[in-house]
Length: 68
Image 1 (spheres, helix red, strand yellow):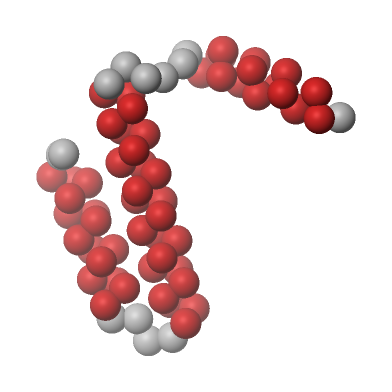
Image 2: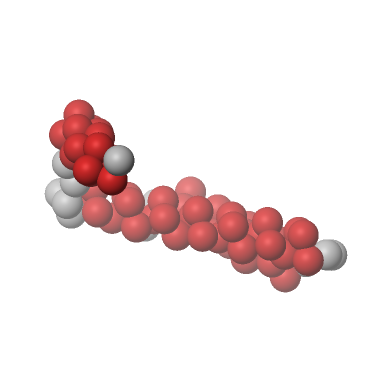
């Protein structure tokens, strides 16, 4: 894992330890969730488990049309 990801994760953990209200705790939890998503996305890309953006957007548009 690149240093920047590890460093960002540690900063987020420190933010949770030092929350001063429920609002700041909630914000820290959202930050941790976003960092986790980014890390998972990075690992998926590195493993070759991704689609070209154009295909992904086309698939999303098709699924959205089916819901209407």
